Every structure is written in C-alpha cells, then in structure tokens.
Length: 131
Image (cartoon, rainbow, N blue to C red; front, side, top):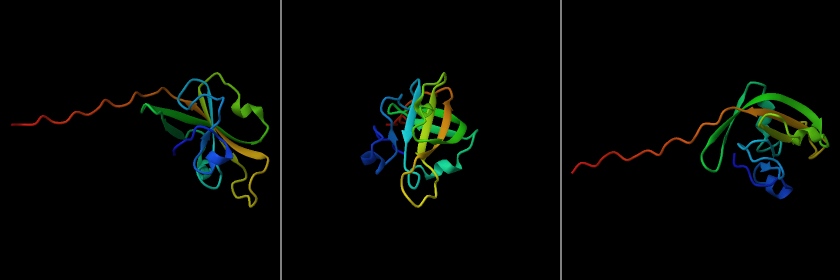
C-alpha cells in the first residue's frame, strides 16, 4: 500500500496515512500509520504476533517489522503513539471490523518491531554488446 503523508480524513479516503509528529516508517522511533477498517486496513484483522510486515522507503530500502502484539484500545489511549525503546511501526484502524456505523471510540492496534534493515539491491548492468 502507498502511505500518504498525513492521517487526515481527506487522506484516509485514498490510502493509509502517516500520523504527523511520529517517525517516518523505517526511521528510528515510533511510526504510526492509520487506515480505514473496511478498505485499506481490512487485512489487519488477519495479522498475529510473529507475522512480518515489509515497508519500502522512498530510497528503495526495505524495512522489515515483526508483529509483537495486537490489541483493542480506546481512541484516547496515548500509548498508541508513545515512544518506545525499540523502533516500531504501529498500525491503527477502527474496531470492530464488522461495525455497521462508521467511527466509534475503539481502535484495533498492531504493534510491530523493526528488524535489521536491508539496503536496496545494486543496479543491474546490461550485458555487453558484441560487435
């Protein structure tokens, strides 16, 4: 999925959004990304501890995260965006997934810890041309 640069309602209509004030995905710190439960983030219900999430930075570097926890929390729970000792990716969507009404005050949260980054692959060179 493409992640937009903010998590406003306008952005979330098109794609998940990065919560401003948190680290960018792949950077040191806590990165929070939000999305709608019935579209882009519907797959979150399938994630479980041990699953892996792959994030590609703008420079092509792949960052791998391992899911360590899923939880349902109140929307005002400040622990969602809190800084942690490890570099983490927090994915947030409304809960329950099958709710008829939009919104609500509960959120489903996926907490994933970053694993060592892998640099982008070297560019491939064209085979020599014979004359």
